[in-house]
Image (cartoon, rainbow, N blue to C red):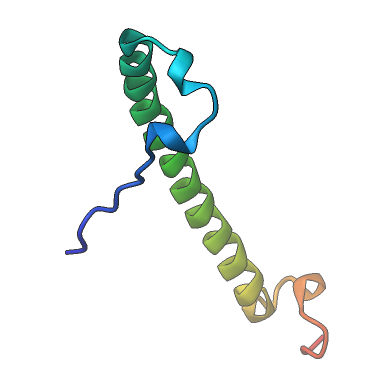
Length: 76
């Protein structure tokens, strides 16, 4: 099993963070975790979908009932 990865940022990586209160920083951290989890899940879902589409395109030449889906250089 792979170790989970962590995305690490420091407040110094961003502009104007000195103007934030500690409560605002806390709320940002809390929201950041939710947003990052959502974004990573979306990338995972998109990757799976893209792989399925590519596989469908690669397997298209194996369908003799649909000659219009044949790749160039295929039979048909």
